[in-house]
Image (cartoon, rainbow, N blue to C red):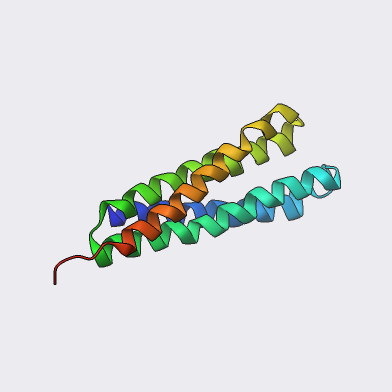
Amino acid sequence: MERRLYILGALAGLIGVALGAFAAHGLKARLEPELLATFETGVRYQLYHAFALLAAAWGYTRWQNRWFGIAGGAFAAGILVFSGSLYLLALTGERWLGAITPLGGLAFLAGWLCLLRGASIRLPA
């Protein structure tokens, strides 16, 4: 489990940096400032949650608790839904995509709650 979470975190970070560079160099002249800011918000949250995936991998290694795997799944879903919807909204201008973005935010919150729950369980020594 921890290897999968670590790989997901590394991939999310790699893709986040690539998308950030794409926004700064390839989209700056093509998108309205508001849409560029929307895209950059998606990148920012993807990068934050790349680190959260790495934290879930570490937590799983440290405590061998299923809550860290659940947290990782929630973070991955949040990246797909939250950041993905913002990327698509910025690139296509389809405003309805903004309606699903909060679902990704809820997934992020669920992931953080699962990290908290995983670290709160006392395991025998």
